[in-house]
Image (cartoon, rainbow, N blue to C red; front, side, top):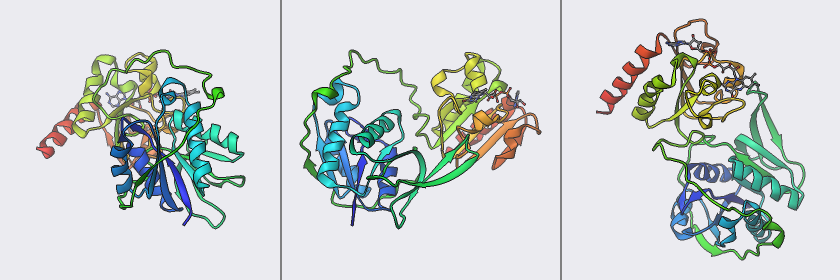
Amino acid sequence: MAEVLVYVDHVDGAVRKPTLELLTLARRIGEPVAVHLGAHADEAAKVLAEYGAVKVLAADAPEFAEYLVAPKVDALQAAYDAVSPAAVLLPSSAEGKEIGARLAVRIGSGIITDAVDLEAGAEGPVATQSVFAASYTTKSRITKGTPIITVKPNSAAPEAAPAAGTVEQLAVTVADSSKGTKIVSRTPRESTGRPELTEAAIVVSGGRGVNGAENFPVIEALADSLGAAVGASRAAVDAGWYPHTNQVGQTGKSVSPQLYIAAGISGAIQHRAGMQTSKTIVAINKDEEAPIFELVDYGVVGDLFEVVPALTDEVKTRKG
Ligand SMILES: Cc1cc2nc3c(=O)[nH]c(=O)nc-3n(C[C@H](O)[C@H](O)[C@H](O)COP(=O)(O)OP(=O)(O)OC[C@H]3O[C@@H](n4cnc5c(N)ncnc54)[C@H](O)[C@@H]3O)c2cc1C
């Protein structure tokens, strides 16, 4: 069976969920071979094996942390040369897309970014994308070179399928031309303790209806009761009520969680563009004519300041 390279996204060996989704999708088109860059490969290999990696190609070099993405592209290219894979899959993060695009240029292949699904096809993998502010769904196949595909988080439910996960060291030579941009400092973002917005299985978002930064704790309380990330409409962000990093939509982040709850959000096309592919959508809005109700699975016509706290209490009660 053809091998499929899966670029591993991890923090100190703790494999992030989008990689497990990639392994699950990779199994549809071949045998997943994981590429792990950085320390703690043995630790990561246990999880990667559980989700179907037959092999883990591991490389560690100080350059991965000292420079921007180019040394990682050198490593992925070394893995590509070693395996001659049927496809290369990466997470659709900013870094994943940049690494994928640079590899595509180097090996003369086509690339598809932001896929939301993947299936095997007679002439190569077929990727589904949600385009034009999510008003169209397209299916595409790469016609030149080895398909390189980046997949959005939450596009597939990770399914365990134990495999060998044998760790093999990958020899990587970092080219001088890959050392053009050095990282001079790092400042960790203050942690909220909530999941990352684009990876969260549940997102609770607030809009202009929240009516002030001082009211966002109402949204946060519901999010925390569900273990969810907090999102916001651009109106809320532009008003300074919530950080820009939490904006969902065309000019913010795209999310595709299992459950998206929109409170006090009207459902403008630009907002929909970032959340329309969510599996289940719930809206709370006091205007029964709000356009958001056109796309919801469950709609509550009501004042969010009554509905959201009641929902939070109910969730807490049911969780005991
Ligand atoms: C180029 C461009 C890019 C854009 N990108 C984005 C983007 O990335 N993301 C984004 O979100 N927007 C984006 N926008 C803006 C977008 O067009 C809308 O203006 C914005 O989404 C509106 O935000 P909102 O729904 O919170 O506010 P509004 O449209 O004002 O809606 C507020 C809603 O809250 C309801 N409400 C009020 N009080 C309550 C209450 N107490 N209880 C319940 N409901 C209540 C109201 O009925 C209303 O439906 C973009 C616009 C442009 C032109």
